Image (cartoon, rainbow, N blue to C red; front, side, top):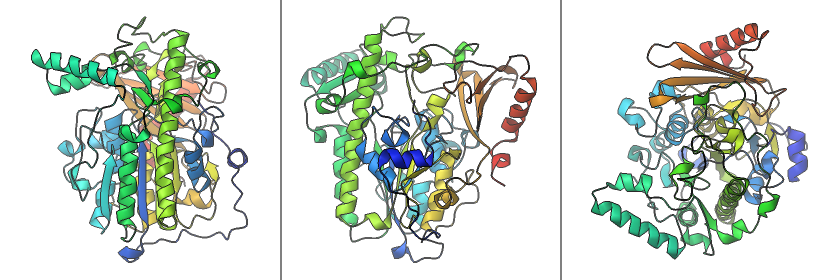
Length: 507
């Protein structure tokens, strides 16, 4: 996992020039502007995108187009999701409300079931005269939200994932056999899966994410003489399976891909806190993996998976590059806010685990880059603690829209003008684990520490605690919550966790 960069290091590594010669000042959009003068929004969300790209300090992963966007915006090197799984994370960031407020903690509950009148981020722009369009996966793909868009139906339906004819044919045969014995389509989608990796020599456009990029470019051509628009663009890879055109696999030599340094559960951590092979084991080549509940794969398997993940990241980077090129070609760049984020992090063998679904740094920390017209200080990074619930109020302020009063985040706009200013003292995440998700883990991340409390959801009883010191243990390898001498520290962090996000706001 890449280490957060200081601003000067980011500028040095990416070749971005310091913006000291530009006149400082506020961003140009403010409430009350006519609709036609408001900025467009290109909102790009990538499934399972770790903060491991060139602009986040990786010397291995090849992401020239994401790095290009970073040179024109601000990188948030410590941005955290509210829950490290698809539906709760997306529901939270797109409503500006935290999972406990929404009462959405799983991939099955639509946020409108419990919050029918909530105004989502794209819906707010729609209500303010924007053309609001989604292409790809924005909300959870099985739980779309038609009120958020001008065009409720998806422009690019979910299609075949695998490109090789052999794999496709095998999938169709297995699905047909399952239908004959009465299996539902939901069951087939969940359990009839091909291999976890595939490298086929096929054009980008034949892959689902390639089609998404092409549809986005077509939409930008239609938007070029209209203003304003909110375009939600969602890519599926590098979510499993790690399927990408062969040329992106060829960017990497598998023998040069390092294995994680901490292929083990954190010392003294509760076993139920980790997910191990939960998601990976549903793919046909890992169903019978050794010790599937422990996550202990062979080195060859681990390198294959890491290779596949990085190939998919480079594939998505190329699709993002195509869209950014179109934005420039159509002369929309100077009037468009661009947001790029991963919906959460992802473990690539760290702690002997693969996937998300935990409260650890690997899962809760993710990618966030924002580029806005009129930014006077571009190409830098901020190490300020940020949360995905902050994205909603940030875009409201950048676009000059009145924000809903119930939002539970904080606009990040002041960090555009001073990336090193004092900011939040803590950020918050949560995840339920244990049998039938009986234990809810709530985590607080401060400048130095990560503290997690696990409580029984039946009676709120404290069943376990975790404490990691990022100054001495940045990989979170040793839980020191019960170490003698840490009693007062645990008490202080428990108080911060109890007081919550309101008390962590900057003075």
